[in-house]
Image 1 (cartoon, rainbow, N blue to C red):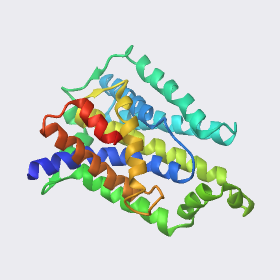
Image 2 (cartoon, one colour):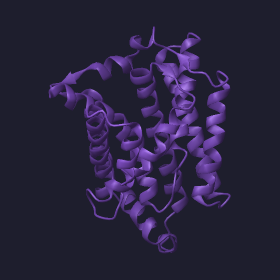
Image 3 (cartoon, rainbow, N blue to C red):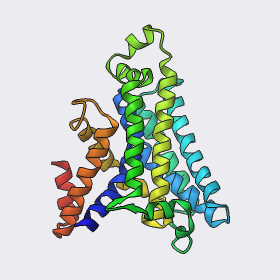
Image 4 (spheres, rainbow, N blue to C red):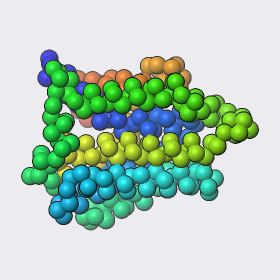
Length: 268
């Protein structure tokens, strides 16, 4: 039905946005497992400042700002300290989660009475036929990032670093700048998606929101490598995979399947 299509795309839109930056990081041969906690920290930061009387725009900027700081710390550990990307982002992830919990001692910060007054909430309620605006935004962002990925020198460097980083460095490319940009883009995408989830889905700041995104996130990113550019993680593939996973979850829910069956299906 039209309503069901809308629900599927509403779920797929912000999920795809959250993972676009991670897709680029993985395509470059690195890892970023901190993106779920970036979303959680952004969520709690926004809720804390918004509830304290800050405007929704300024609270949103604060939330995105702390998310970018997490991305910058991950990049610093990878680039300057030469730690393995997996180890670096594993270290950053619980630190961000702990900071998110510190805002309220681990409790959610409820925004249900005021979340619908925000600009993001208004945008996410709009639809063009069965297509929610948040999914249209995800498609637009994917197209822009696809263009950068496929038609620019920067985009080609992403895959070149993933294939042979030493060759790229010997060609005189400042790979550290690319790594920095990738981790910042990953944090920015996760932060924006965290805001969307906070305002439109949970209507509250969620200190442990990220736990639900880890498995789904990497399932989608690697599944996307089979949709387009076979064997290469890419943003369009990630968006397609987000829709596929949303269809799977939505369908099993309507069939009354137990949560464990849904998780097993994703694993298979």
